[in-house]
Image 1 (cartoon, rainbow, N blue to C red):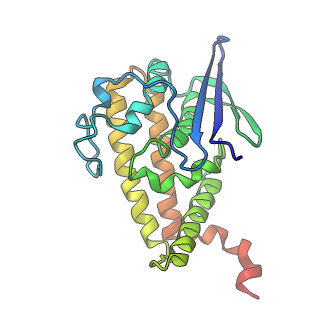
Image 2: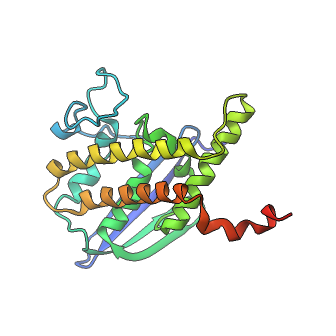
Length: 233
């Protein structure tokens, strides 16, 4: 019988010897974030507080699901500075990763899982990438994974006899919507954080989204030579 959940473990080791672990448990079928303990709401998690301008949730939702799921992370790193060194280890079901990096980059990688898995309708479009999470990925690796995800989605739309966007035009719109969500979350974190690591983790995610838009607008030119065997046959 297939497992009902799977976990991704993020472990931070700081220069002063402190360590902190975050276990991100996900439903194996839906990729929803599984919460064993309900996080305590904060004023900055209320849906109407710095609400994203493109928010699709009804007023019945008292709290922003993304903000609510980030409470523990944001409060732990509230005093952390972006460039504070940390050794970040990540354990997935398949393999482990370890990198000496900065707090902001480790945080950004972890938030890149938690945010799409939280139940935000806009970020749901990025959820398939959670299943194939690649910690500390380069911009080009992220661009490739994103494009691959989107084209796979179009394949399934075609099989369901729905219109498919092979030109990637709608993928641009996806990331423009995601940018508005990142901005909304950043506005919340400005209030919730004393230092800058949390906020700059979102800025990194935002810059990746900008890069993907440029990547599409240049027609994936950076990858063209890799696909000669398909184009020239």
